[in-house]
Length: 494
Image 1 (tube, rainbow, N blue to C red):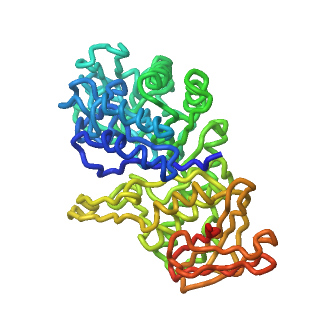
Image 2: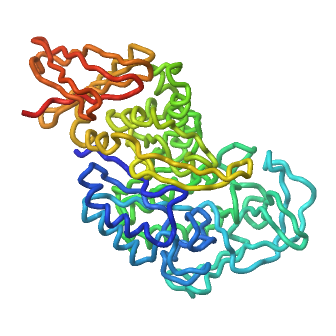
Image 3: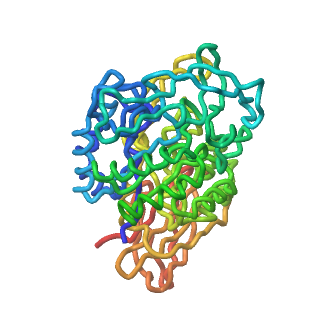
């Protein structure tokens, strides 16, 4: 079976102008050849900010760049025709298509309504402040340009649990919308940060409304009929009741495909929280290993002071490897974003080797690490910063190495705080490799591969070390790594 490798084909600052779908189609074949098996596309439906929307300010899930809404027909990434062509191109290249789903909230309402709201303490949303009051809120979504095509569902105040801005009287904060659902309380089975983390932003969706629940199930079936779809990435699941996705994932697998890949963004560095969430959704999906990503960031900044033997401590991949999608960076952790936890460029190849070449977890590659990115944005201090995210040296070769050499059982040699190694022993049909990495000075290790490897010659597939390594009569081979680097030693052909 081919090792699955996911690529996030966008970042927060992906250039606009409707060009991304064309780039996906153009690169699809080369991605398949490199070893990418799955591509995660950004939200493909219309956001409240129209052509400038990254996609997480969800407005109309049924507008895939087809209707003149929010000042544009196309989304930031292109129109519906371009999306269909991109997804088909990936499928033609034997690459699975993974789509981003934003169910937590809606933004950019078409009309206002009178609502009854209760202000809550932003730091403890279970704590009410003052008495309920009537106000006007942006909670009515009619999608006039779509005019009922695909769905006639109208979203109103009964479809939402909270809001952060009201008028008449004008006020900002976190407000619980009082309707017939939940007896004035927030949804349960959400993260407990801020007492209850049901509310995140915009008009917060009320999943206890059965009409909403059925509409979102219908959307899942509808979407999979519109474009090639092999799975979903679920956004902001900390803020959505776990019971909803426990039901929704089961529904789409039952009605669309039992093989659908589903990974959720439950961004928590605490492995216990990730495991608890998986229990609540009956282990039907995978999670991004936030704990490991943050550990990579810390290791990269600590340099030689970090004990590499502990790199996987507290990670999801160490506890539940079949549920972990491992990553080095994503659109939320990149510089100037909300969860910024950058991995320093020197350490990024080591981190990628640790997710791409090991037996455990499904790795996710980030677009700027493969292709580079430059952008300017304001920092928290209000100043402008120019960011240059360089291409990670050797990343295509590491992806290729996963495809060719990350085979068979694994042996860890985590015996030195500054130089660790692991062996993939290969199979009868496919070769293995020896991976060695160091965050300190140059290092070497003698690895026992077994008598069947006696006399074999190995070379560094990444080209960091020029010399060959030859196994002795008992199958022992000494491999080397440069300081602050990684090498992947593989059998030399010919």
